Length: 206
Image (cartoon, rainbow, N blue to C red; front, side, top):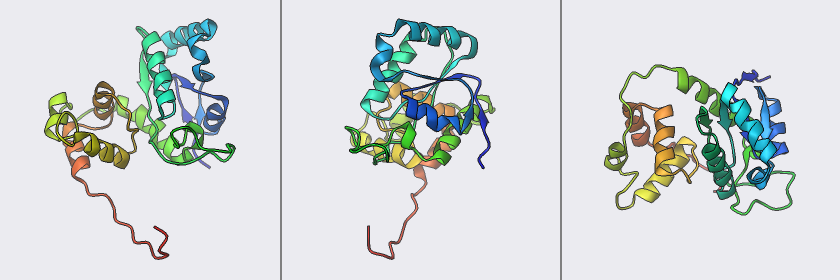
């Protein structure tokens, strides 16, 4: 049985199925936005801000456009509040309870493998506390590494983000913040230059 992860921050997810997924993973307070309902639900917004000022927020929404729209909204209303953004990877698929895939054809929080969620939540907690032994990453570094602002950088960035398990929709600012929470500059260079594993399909299904 997996070890329950203690989360001090208030965890914000989109829906009740996301909350149910986390119930077996974390010990903490989970609040749902009920999708776009958060935009007009003044009572819930005040609850999130009040609790957020006391405990901080951890935002865990889907990797599609809707998820990023909700995430950005939460970040915008959380003025003066400590916010941790945890991003799930963009993985093609469909949740078993749904008849058809989502509009973008990717899994939401409820469909992501439990082990992946455990790793992301644990990584977020340790990354914020661990002492860094190398220098921070800058916008200039992203340019020099060819994953921002250069010819072909969009595809190179997409491939890199897929390989390290981050969504493709990260803005330049969010990308820099997230990479700095996970890597030092030296670790980023090593991660970027690492070759992906090769797989041999013995059954000829790939």
